[in-house]
Image 1 (cartoon, rainbow over the protein chains, first blue to last red):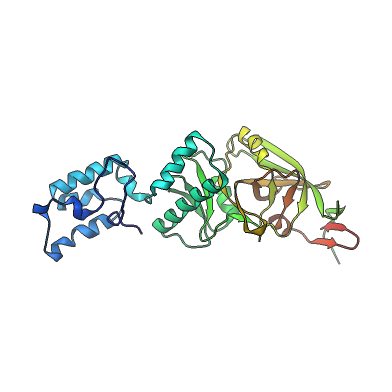
Image 2 (cartoon, each protein chain N blue to C red; image 1 turned 120 degrees about the horizontal axis):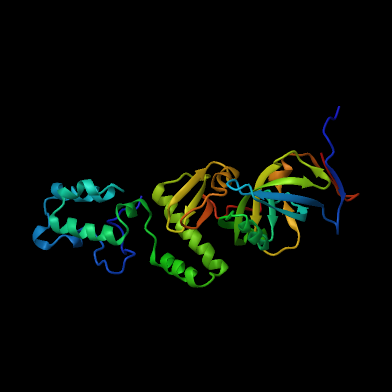
Length: 171
Length: 139
């Protein structure tokens, strides 16, 4: 599962912080390895980070609050991080039709990130939003389509076979 | 003693096994439905139920069903985006199935005039492909 600490970029361009280490002002930096490890697991525990904020120095907690607000709240940690290339394609899709290769690349990238983030087993079938949320999973293709049939979703979804490049087609 | 009912016996067209089929898509919330009637090429290399042109998508959306996108594997390993929908086979040839029909996956992709009928449907029947006489029999 991807760690917030490991992320090199954050989708919101206003945020400068990329790692916990850079977020801690020098005079507050913990040298002791035992105390330092307190900070690492906290940010690994998704999605409910708010209960741990009282253990973190005030300056860092304020900065994390700012990151949460800019990324849509605590819920943002329950989604996989999507690279800027995906965001660019999503923005382009709002204004113009994507090419075949762009659409496939978009679905593939989001699916790969989502599957890794939620550690989904190969062979299952999933319905995924273009922001990386899982809306439904099933063991069989037809069962998935039956589950999502006729439902209205706030975001557009696509279907994906975990561990495969295609949902169906030639044998 | 063979108690299976003969559902269809059709001669090949242009050397290929074709069947006339009628598919229905139903909106489970409103009960509205739309049908797709086409000639389907019987394709044992296709793992789905039916494959029709993407142009039918608008008819399905009109009844309030919004099929999701997905990737479709084509011959030669090519991949294309396509739409997927839950549908029923209502009729094949002159044989009408008891309501609601046989459930299967409908793929909407490309622009071919004929559809494909794949293994997800064929697995319900015994299909005999008589090559020398160019006759397809489904029981």
